[in-house]
Image (tube, rainbow, N blue to C red; front, side, top):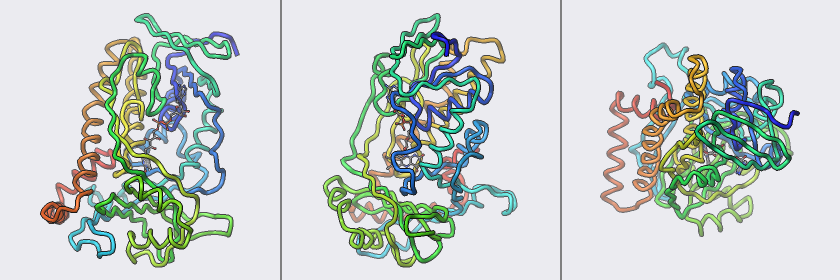
Length: 412
Ligand SMILES: Cc1cc2nc3c(=O)[nH]c(=O)nc-3n(C[C@H](O)[C@H](O)[C@H](O)COP(=O)(O)OP(=O)(O)OC[C@H]3O[C@@H](n4cnc5c(N)ncnc54)[C@H](O)[C@@H]3O)c2cc1C
């Protein structure tokens, strides 16, 4: 490759948001470079490991237009129902629960109604991204590579540690929660630790999940069961599979995480309830510290922040990656419009429009997930009663339910 290339957009960070944005731009013919400091192996574990994303319906167009959805090697599992309950460990869930059916989000006939979203294995998305990154012509991939970035009103220069130079109109910070580009731009970032860890794993169960997700709010943290497609593990095929995202205070998460399979499975069953029959842990176990962050600005001179570089939220509603995908949808659309109109695809007007398109929504989702976490991680009896009544009230108000569904799926 030439020692200097000219592109419209240089994306720093090839995580799911940066890589999907780069594929989306390149698929529309926009010259793009993507740089990641690590090589892009398929995943650290090539087999089923139980990690999955809830990809909301509103994120699907990004993956379609980028040419990624058709490349997913493992079938996504549609989410057709969501059941929300409030409870205490060792007690049955409160009878005042909230159930969302995907048909409630729409007024069309049942057969045409799209799902809320899909559970997509993390390895599946990574394999599709890597395959696409390798085949798109207007896309140059540099990984592993470190970039030194110089931004000025006239343009951006990226000097890579292998001697490669890239000239761009816009640089996109997609480096995740510790963005060196945001830091270099002097963008203040507010961070908050929940003092919780999420345990992520998968289970096999004897009864079908019927494509329904469960969010069970427990005082020590939310416990989510998310439907997955049948899979194959070392011991053979598994018909009924769900992902588990289970939040606990850090010390308790440490203990639970190290239990043997039988006791770990029993703890999951205590939180899940009996509806899926007997459960058995499969896949691997992962543990993530939970925190929120918000960058006070999403732009600077010829710089736009996307994904976790701009905002990190509690996984309580499975929306973190979806927020990043919506940043990518907004930014790609604005870049394409600017190019079509002969405007500067990294100038102040585009950056202002990008801010207007994403900031309010991102802040709202950060506040909503933080508020949910605080509201439900509390065992104070009057508060329990109030939120149970709130859950029951929402369940009986179809317009309010539709509002929540549209916010969560990003459709409409
Ligand atoms: C337990 C848990 C469960 C979750 N479940 C869901 C879910 O169901 N649905 C959902 O929507 N979201 C979910 N999320 C959130 C989701 O995982 C994140 O929002 C998402 O990974 C952010 O993607 P990203 O591309 O912005 O950043 P990252 O995934 O952090 O990627 C950043 C990339 O940048 C690279 N990089 C870093 N620094 C540099 C540098 N200096 N130079 C070059 N490259 C660099 C890294 O190597 C990496 O490849 C969950 C999060 C957690 C913790």
